[in-house]
Image (cartoon, rainbow, N blue to C red; front, side, top):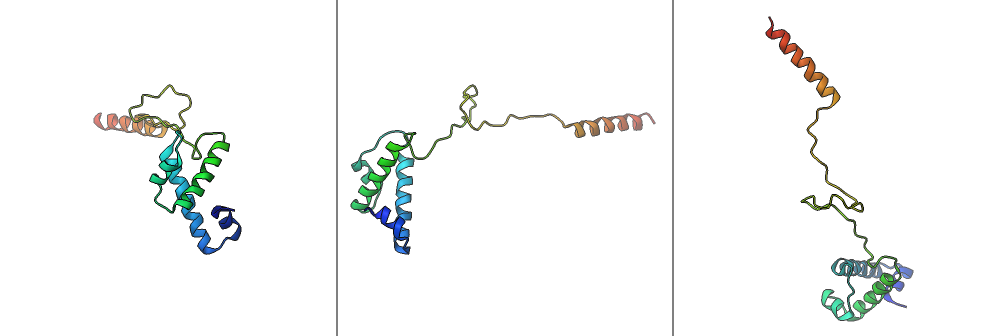
Length: 124
């Protein structure tokens, strides 16, 4: 039984801190690696922890990564680039708003009333 499984079963305060550090290590592995595969020595360079703990976390992370449908455990969301060059990509989740310099109906009504009032005052 690994430390991760022991921490989940026992739920002790000391084990919870170990569990939190393991989750942080998994997050660091996922963010640093992205879509490419990583080996255990590279993970040891990336994570500055106990070698036994790194091995357990790396084994757990690589097993989860292989069994998941996507290659990464943290899903990536496509966004539009700042220069707006990816406007035709249908898989972009978030697009930037375009500048609209239109007056609303209420604003245009107030503008027309104001201009009529100004014309009426100038005619006096």
